[in-house]
Image (cartoon, protein in one colour):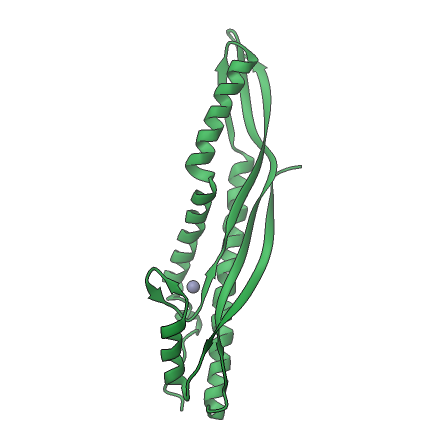
Length: 198
Ligand SMILES: [Zn+2]
């Protein structure tokens, strides 16, 4: 079986916010919202990722003498998932009809933004799998055993350098950071609460 992308699903959890109008609700979000880099946000998505790789080896006779071992990623999977944290209004009873509608609109846009983080993680995970699928490390040795040992060492160091779990996490984090920069954390996509609505 070839290396595959696996999706562990998305979990959405909520934190409670309250207020008598949109202005106080916004303040409540900024006080209780999830933290990222010391800054509170109205919502946050994290996308855990984990690689589980299987390797194969092929031997060829070297032109001069000895053997060449070629190690490739032959199977296993790279698994990603999503965890979204969203605000939930304790009660909207104090809000006007217009304010209720604005909260609803904002919440939907915010969720769209968070879901796009998961979609971007999916795209990057597919890219990672494509890279791994064509990764070949080879080494020479006097015997098959020597060649294999050297090729395995090269593969292990390559995986550690670019595809270890913490490297994959960092790579996804960079994707999320750039998306947040480009969208201003969803504000440019409409995820901004209009507190002027009374
Ligand atoms: Zn974001």
